[in-house]
Image (tube, rainbow, N blue to C red):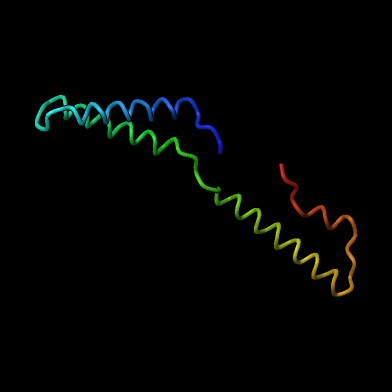
Length: 94
């Protein structure tokens, strides 16, 4: 499992402390409202710092590469062999 970045651990630690403080406060107090606002802001930061899913552009590149490879293989299967220059169209991973 990948280790969580330091700033993410700090945000989650502060969020946990704020939630504990929120439980101890009386409901209609001013401190409760301030702590609740802090919890909402910290929760918003955790959502922004989560790793995103695979980029759509990456999926398009992978799909295009697979399509190109399949077309090359189908062309070779028909009997037309491909020179080494044709393989230059397939993108190399970076």
